[in-house]
Length: 632
Image (tube, rainbow, N blue to C red):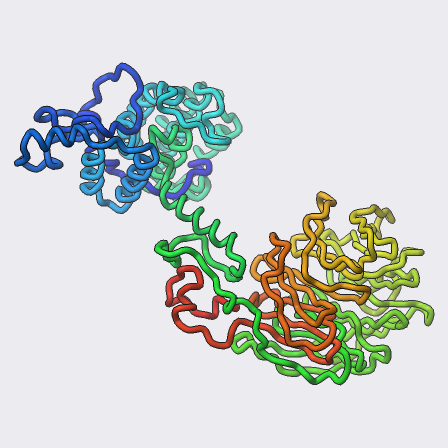
């Protein structure tokens, strides 16, 4: 874009009134013997009539009002306690924010009474010249600012700031941005010859960003101002584009000379985001703005807003329930049982209630694993170790599309869909590892891999498989290569992968739940509390942004952890036997389901009733925001 990454529009065309060094707002400041610091509180501001105040305002006693105070009062002003650096910074931040709201007289009084200066007079002059489009004067101002960019009394170096490069190069960058705006405004006004002169005689000699100069030269061919603005992604001549330009220019100046744009809002937003990150139960999507947040209280999410409460108990299965899984669009839940059936449930997003939609029968060995196709149109069901068959069902019709079995000696206990939705991989602990199409035709196979659990990587080529050697390996079916990714010291009973493919969650025999970084191939965290023997228990990522982890346990409980904390933040009771599987709704972060050997599926959600005070306490949010945000 024309502003090359400039920030949001933030400065007004008029500049900051009354901030020039002599208080007239229009005359040039007198030369200073050395660069001034940004604040001079503690100095006398009323020693003589018409004296220059430290923020550049003409000073008189009582903030410009006729003085009625005695000399003793004036003496007390001189002895006023000097402000700390943090106090000065806060006053400047408040002043900048008030100026952005147009409360300029309030800013003048604040600076006068505090003895602070919002910004250096040279910066004020530069700001006004930029906003008024006086490009030659703005260029001249750079020479004065150049001295401030390396002064020990003025510079506060920021990490990765443009100030870390040489001052000369920094000034060239600023000059380039000024001339670019000047060039574009000439073009928009139809002054092609003047624009060409800027391009050839001013921009090109800088020998900075030649590639950008070539792009700018192409704008000479634009036949209409609208065409120019569209191609340059530029707002056009005026306050908006100049404000963005100024925001970009400010990043090259130390904050003691000119504050970064909207600095107070930035700090407040960072504080709110940090509080949200530290909130154990934060599970809602909120925008990054401050409009829906109260700054008067800390961000707190109550446990009552978290899916810790039984919403419903599904008892339609008549034997142990081994697996459950929400569809990718969050509208359905599938549960598989030892009773040989799969039940598909419809999710009501408003009431969080589930109702039985279809029952898929005929799985003679029971159903221990289920996998939804990427578009949720198909559902594959697998059985326990002694099952050699795999069922592929059409979800919409409830009809069996494919019943696949390569050999009666096979064990097909796990399955994973390729991202294209046209292929899947399946395998088991007897050494089978197949890739098949939707009709069950064998496309590829890998011999001698005793598979415990499978996952297809988003690249469409690699399959992750945990095996009987206590490891997870990556298998590429295209070039037939494989590599070790995770190595544990105990059997990996199951695993799942986060949406971004970076993290893997493992249920490890006798150890519990482990979090691995697949990219760096390191163990990140071991979660405490869960009871894990040699049963196959399936855990899951969940919640908004997958910030949480949930797992079943052999002690009949469901455990929930925040991803960054090893200790559980919730232990859910209600099941009376081992909890085999937990699934978190991928669309409704306030909804979760668990399957147990007690023959039930429990649906978990927020507390049924939240009083208005608890709802307001969601984050210090505006109470008008619907409680439905808890679910969405």
